[in-house]
Amino acid sequence: MKVIATIRTGFRSKFGVPRQSGLLESVKGTIVFEPGYRDPSALRGLEEFSHIWIVWEFSQAIRSEWSPTVRPPRLGGNVRMGVFATRSPFRPNPIGLSCVRLEGIDLKGPDGPVIHVSGADLVDGTPIYDIKPYIPYTDCRTDASGGFTDSVDMHALDVTVPPDIAAGIPAGTLQAIRDILSQDPRPRYQQDPERTYSFEYDRYNIRFKVVADKLSVEGITQTRHENSTR
Image (cartoon, rainbow, N blue to C red; front, side, top):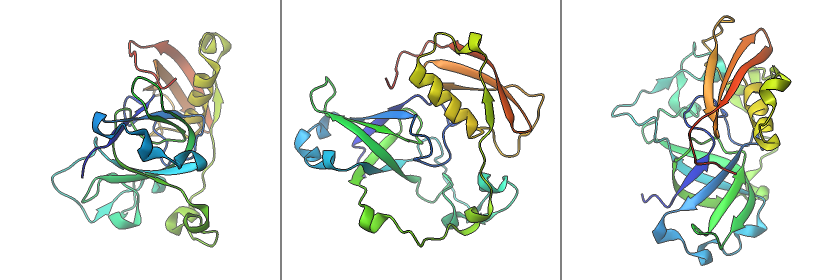
């Protein structure tokens, strides 16, 4: 397996990353190919598709041993399910699969060609093994069942960002931050209303608290990271 590219996103760590791809299209990413794969002809025809599959490595979850059961966050981290019945990063082979929207292809940039996507659920710098087009007539199964995930209610948190905290943050970045927070990035087993949580996205450190279904942002400060997905 050869790493053909890496992805640039605003996520500096696993905390805050959407639990599935495609949930938040306000979250942007850029796929940058390794020098040996920067051939525009390899992308010929890809611009005709609206979505792509990314095959990638769980580079921050590599372990020497594996377990046949894991604790899915969707079930609160209290129930064990078979690893092959989940999308847990802790697998015999640390391979991930994400479906993202293809926003555009830049053939002429200094690192070109690069692919711009939205809806990615990958940490910044994640290695990519392959890219394939999403084909609706075969990849979309309208009669599919979601197993145990069908029985778990998903609801968005009510996010409040005070105007003085939101001031000066680019609109697109602020919307992405709101969307990420609405999905409740906390581990399912952490529900302390007194605790202040924090994570980094793009060039910002975001601090927040959650009481019931209401999330309040305590502060957003700029970090020193220079890399940005914009």
